[in-house]
Image 1 (cartoon, rainbow, N blue to C red):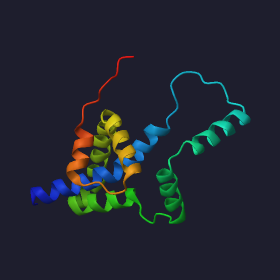
Image 2 (cartoon, rainbow, N blue to C red; image 1 turned 90 degrees about the horizontal axis):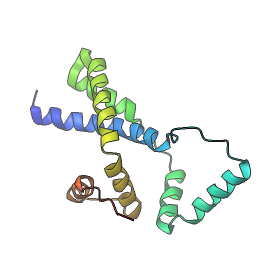
Image 3 (tube, rainbow, N blue to C red; image 1 turned 45 degrees about the horizontal axis):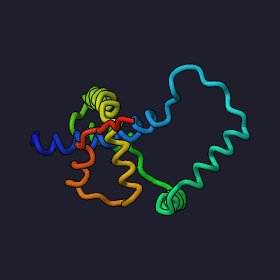
Image 4 (spheres, one colour; image 1 turned 120 degrees about the vertical axis):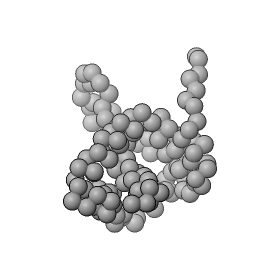
Length: 142
């Protein structure tokens, strides 16, 4: 097998699997006890979050809701894994999931920065993505 093809295909599989893992990380609750929030407080918070969205963010949300996505990342990853590993696809896909489970939390900050950049402009060239993802996290001292 051509190593360049394998690298490209496995990169494609990792990207397909990383979205769901990153979504899970973004939605996970904070550790520790959290009291139930009264409905009125939750509604006010949701309304406040809608108000602070930029016009560009609202446009992207509207466009996304208007055109449902027909793809399936998990299915795509499984098909690519089958193309690479044949009968060993299940084991290969499990290994790819393990890689994603390690990489996504390690790069959570960079993924968030890329998400923010994509809210500003829907298309970002490869070198610009590299610059965003490889940037060092800077901590501000308050």
